[in-house]
Length: 95
Image (tube, rainbow, N blue to C red):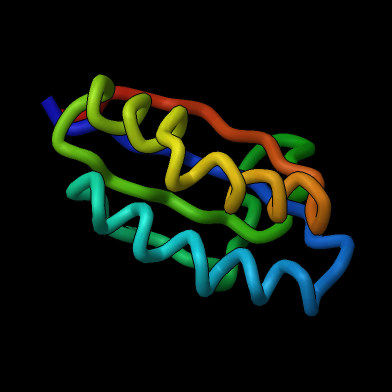
C-alpha cells in the first residue's frame, strides 16, 4: 500500500533551505520515492490551519518511507532542514 510523507514547513533560513532541497531530492529517489507536491500554492478551505510550504512525498509503502527517513544518507540532510526550517511531518498510508 502506498504511503505519503506530508510536511508543513516554515522556512527560517531561505539560503540554507535551498541547500536542503538540492540534497534531499536524491535521497527520496534512492528509496523509490517521488514528490507529489513541492511547495505549490495552498489555500485553506476549512479550519484555522495556516500552512507554510507543503511537501508531499509518495513511497511504495510506509516501511519504505520510514527506511528513507531514518537512513544514513538522509540523516545529515535532515539536520540541514532542522537548522533552516520549523517542520511538521506525518506519515499516512494511502490507497
